[in-house]
Amino acid sequence: MEQPLIHDNFMLHSDTARELYHRHAAKMPIIDYHCHLSPALIAEDYRFADITELWLSGDHYKWRAMRANGVDERYITGDASPREKFRKWAETVPYTMRNPLYHWTAMELKTAFGIDTPLTPETADEIFDECNRQLACPDMTVRGLMRRYNVEIVCTTDDPIDSLEHHKAIAESGFEIRVLPAWRPDKAMAGAPAAAYKEYIARLGAAASIDITDYSSLIAALQNRHDFFASRGCSVADHGLSRVPWAPCSAERANELFVKLLSGTDLTAEEAEQFNTHLLLDLCRMNARAGWVQQFHFGPMRNVNARTFKALGPDTGFDTISDWKAAEAIAQILNALDADNLLSKTILYNINPSDNTWVAAMTANFQDGRTPGKIQMGAAWWFNDQLSGMKAQMDALSMQGLLSRFVGMLTDSRSFVSYTRHDYFRRLLCDTLGNDVEQGLIPRSQIDRVAGMVDDICYNNAKNYFNF
Image (cartoon, rainbow, N blue to C red; front, side, top):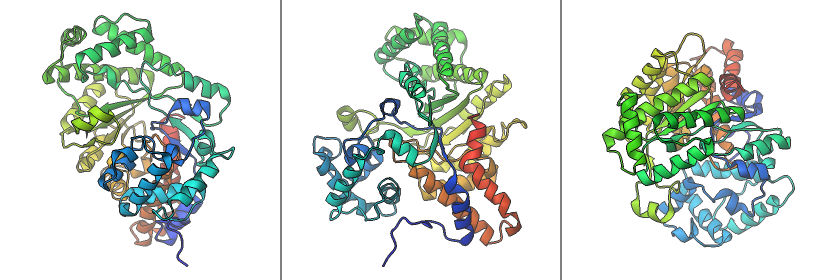
């Protein structure tokens, strides 16, 4: 009888890999330092109505695959019933072989529900009913799922205007898993139409109890909220940058451009780059003074299909990889902050895999000789968090820097069963290092050090880097 796809030694192709995984990686708690989970659902300890809500709602990875398989939008984001939507996903799964969704689907069914049966059109109703039966069990709430995956800490992604009331409620509830906010001030950057931007600035001012009329009051409001986030346990900032800006301007010029935006007049592309450069540097200085870790996620081209964006809005599966150049801008930003001794711990995530080598090399230019791995090449992100993408990221980092100091994987997800991505990464890590030992590239006499490296990348490095 053929063994299930997901088994104890899945992806582990040598005795050494199996030893590293089972004795070390598999036992490590999860620190998910960047995700998009809903703090409200965690505070409520939400119970999903069915597997479709848990698994398909908001998952644009699956939505993209379903569209590519010819599935009508009614069964993706439309008004079809949960069972109908699940059946359409089941029809799509057999066509996802060699896409990471094929493995993720099997891993999530196995780890969350103990189901080994492949999801196909023929098994769809059986699996739908069994998952729903289990989701009605007392321990299958949002918090129960987090416990099941041995999660220790998560950092959500939160706008400066957020009240963080749900984080406060979680902390006061006694929930043993720490749920911390992460500061994401993207909407303060120029990019939205002036009318929408002005509306956001008014909401930011209200949250900070500051009347924002010029650039200095903008910074005062952002600093007020930055301090508030710190008071709620935040120590991580995240900056989502489609194009990395670099067009320095004076404080006076930044104020002129901000006042222009507040007047309802859109900035030109050149003006927006000037303003965003000035503001990004000021935000990074806030991070450094607070001792926070900052993350730069850069390079996606968002909402490229105007028709679907108008119909469905953002984050619905119509973003893509860009080929914008970012190396010079990143170098200039890091250099400017370093020159002022205000470069905090920084993680660089590139979405275009062709940028892997220069990103890995860039990190070495700004290490300070005191903080191990101060400037990090981030985990394979978004379109790259699959086998070839994760392997390419680890290889680039290994060749240009120190894989041993890597802070490891994250989910970058809205799903409470996507923690399997950590396991996927851990298995690949152990297989890669195990193969190096088996091939004599790392001496067998150093196996204890290799095992320690696995422990560090899976858990210890993140724990120490983020001061958790």
